[in-house]
Image 1 (cartoon, rainbow, N blue to C red):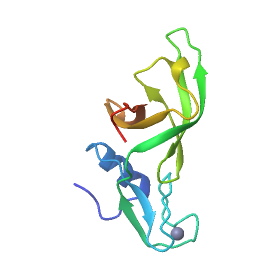
Image 2: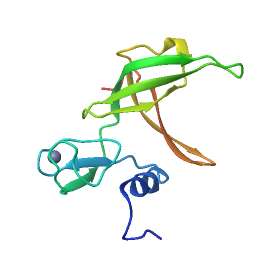
Image 3: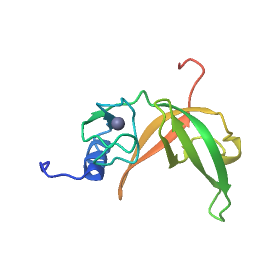
Length: 126
Ligand SMILES: [Zn+2]
């Protein structure tokens, strides 16, 4: 059951667990933001509408983290709608993740909860 009193991040993860990625879009200035807040960080409006982004994004910066268990990357990803978020690119070698790489969202359902990651966009896509 979803409670009516729900914080922005509860709402975000609730939907993510149902494979729905939505972020708040401001009804006043039209800007998207992430991580979800109660007020628009750009104009302070409470008039926020949860909206599904296209899911298309670009790697803004990336770091490969070296671990004995295997390397992985931590990337700052810029959504087509503007917000940037820390995540990682899955499915390719961490060293192949480059600034400017075209990616799209992918939701992992893990035991400890859903997680938004990104995968390389195929040439046939957008
Ligand atoms: Zn706004």
